[in-house]
Length: 326
Image 1 (spheres, rainbow, N blue to C red):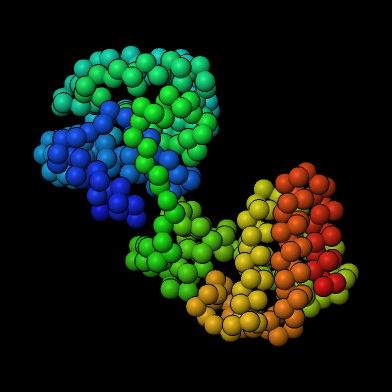
Image 2 (cartoon, helix red, strand yellow):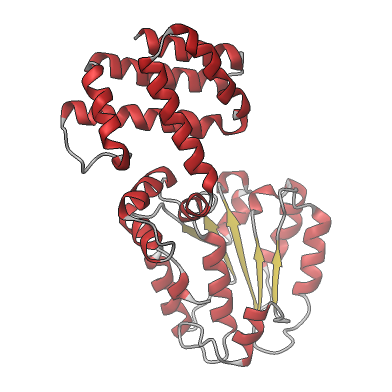
């Protein structure tokens, strides 16, 4: 594992290579960005590179340090995973004890604290002294979804690196080259990933997304073409997929967005569900522009209502009936 295994974030990687070569390493870094954007992977690769015996700006993958890191047995590397639980003061105290111990082998000890936004305020206050006066041999790498949860004094003592969504083409190339997806499949998956590489990989490796998407497209087709009575039997799918309703409604919005694009422009370049163009074309011929816009508005309104704790079953039923009436 090295920087070549990271998809995207090239400016951050280039910066790391430069500071390693110049031996201009800060004592603490805060990696901020959406979940599954690649923060943890970059943190691990950076940690491995900092511990590499050759110090050439990237990990050599052959020295004793690199081999131990890859096997998960490096004595000067520590990683703390919250697994969804709060990072409490006692956890920080354990980390501080480990920080106080000199490196066993090299010149550095690297600590990765994942999901630091789950840290309690008491733990933050306890950790602040460590960030203010860290031992020279320590580098602390922290990942966070939103740094606003942290004390300003914590943030001010870190180098903050913003991880931004990847370009669609970067994700498409990954899905084609590594996961053997066709370009149409990769385009669909990348569009739903919102530039988050981990999400794209999860979708690519799972049949669930494919099955749900197919079911949603079938439901949309039935709502448009069937009678009112059929609506009540379609509700069962939504009842069984409550935990994924946000993704399902997003799939529906994306579908009607594509229908609108075909209606207005008739161009493939901007279509997300390109593999379903014949059905999209059928729907675009059947629906007027005004009706398509109204349907998108209805779905968005349903999404807002559900997250405002409006009755779920009623919200879905009204949505399906209203779409059909439109």
